[in-house]
Length: 368
Image (cartoon, rainbow, N blue to C red):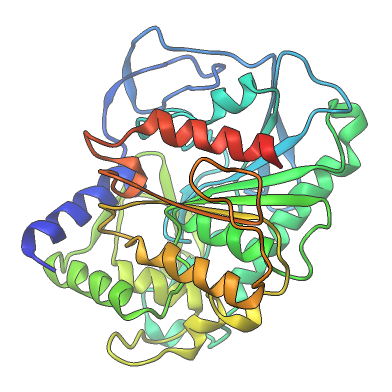
């Protein structure tokens, strides 16, 4: 990877996953598109008819913000949204998740509300960043299992309280970005996934964690920035130095993120890591259920190359050769893959047609 590409990848990682850049935006905490980074209100605030914080488990981080459209009843379908952050970075107990509604220059929350969907934006138990390799237990699915349980619990809470909340209890879709894309894809194809889940959409999510191209790119990024990447602002992560409690203003390396998520003492960059295959959606043994998938990726993504979407698409079709392919312009199907021109990680890029991306998500949700 060229040095300019490395710099681009670092900037993407810094801005779109970990940073809290100051900018203009909506400064009203009650708005759907509230931006905690905004220093000056730009008049863009929009509001849902209802905005309720729900707890779906005993851990303080197991919460979700439920946004309801203006007209909602027992027929209102639900989208559950899962943020990214390299599996270790997330939000603290008091901050709102603004990933899906303007923080990164695009907004899918409001278009889905306008289309009549209820949207549950969830927090989940992130992996503990292991600063010392000796702290690993060798349990490759330790943190992964927690994330799968959290999605289960979130959907079950919405189902159990559907009548009171004014939503449908038998029609759920998942939307995840970056590591959240990996999480929703992994959940959707599990045999144990909720039987009322009808589809999952992954935005630039990794799927082959032991892939050479992916690992080499992360290794080169760490080599170029040996001090690591600063996690600050509203972003928090758990570290073993702090007994796996949330903290901020700390540095991390991307390979250590991956190793920590897999709970092992090393990542072999130029050899196989079976434990990473255990938590990769492309692994044939992990593809158990043909829940419809929409894989979305940018062709200029230097952090998670679009080959990750290609690999998942091929693995899914190898397992389910009779799957209905949703070709260009078609949204009703079992599997769809779209690589968007001029788009980087987080849909960054001056030529990236973000409105087209958001419209495609709504069309897919409507078709399912």
